[in-house]
Every structure is written in C-alpha cells, then in structure tokens.
Image (cartoon, rainbow, N blue to C red; front, side, top):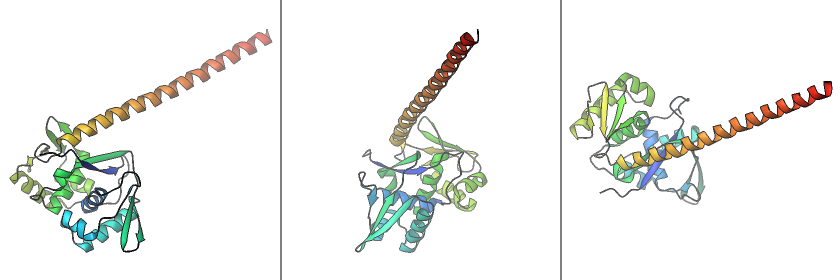
Length: 226
C-alpha cells in the first residue's frame, strides 16, 4: 500500500552537462536525503542506517559521499560523533517513493539503475518508457552495458519491466510504487511551465514599454525639429 511519501534527487535538465556521478552515488544520495529536515536541509543517518536501507557497504557509502561532495550535491561537517549532511537544491528533480526504496526484492544495483534512468523516461499511462539502446543508456547513466542488460533481465523476471531485450523498455510504474510520484512530478512541471510563461510575459511587456517609450521620445524630438 502506498504511503505517499517520497524523496527527490535533483539534477540538471537532460540537455545540460550532467554531474560526474554514477547510479550508486545517486541511490546513496536519495538514501541519505530521505532523513533530511526540510527546515535545515540537513540529515545525519549513520552508516549503519544507510547500509540497512540500501545494502551498501561502508566503503561504498564513503566513496559515494565523496563523489557527491565533489559534485556539490552535499556538504558535510562533524558534530561530535555525528556526520551532518547538508543538501543543495537544483531546479530539475526526480521523485522516488519510500515504497519503491523499501522493496526487498530489488537489489542495490537494480534500485540504482532505476533511479539513474528515470530522468530519461517518458510516462505513457502507467508505464515509464525509455527509448535508448543499452549502449546509449550506458553512456548517459555511467553504468556498464553488461550491468544494464543484467538489470533489465532481472527486472523483467520480477514483473517490473517489459521489453528487456527490445529498444523500447517499459517500466511498470504501479508495480514499482512510482505512479503517484509521477503525478506529483507532472503537477510540478505544469506549475513550472506556468511560472516560466509568466516570466516570459513580463519580459515581453517590459520590452513593449521600452519600445513605446522610444516611439514617444522620437515623436517629441520630431516636434521640436519642426
């Protein structure tokens, strides 16, 4: 049953330069941000908690955190024995439900793969479709092509994906407990588009005002010349 709670992973738009992060880094980011205080934008889950939630070893967590710091996704500081994580926000993001993150039948690698690919999906009814070859996807998400093929086959066997060996891959959003967060994402995109339209209208109005003022100034100058 969906609990309608989710955590976000921020990222640049697809036509911008992507951070030097791989799928494991992104999953560890989401796993830590899940515990974030919305007022302070900080969290301090222990390595033991992150390991329990993701299955990642402490060595992997540290490497991922170092990569996230390098790419300016996180800042850290020590307070006694606690490691405090401070988050930075970006405009674009992908949401992931707690129910998806907690699925015990999905491996660390499979969750990492889904988190990394969601920004390249487009929604069609209850499916998240990807139209990239495994080779193209490997370049986009920084995951070996062989690992992608293995994830696709495993996810198809588990009922979360159709078309593992085909060009168009269909992720089953309802089964992944990701359907409601796509609705949230769509609503956010509509709000963002309306905001962009308003800003564009303001610029056009400002431009028209300048043009009108320039016309008035020319008329006044012509009157004086006459």
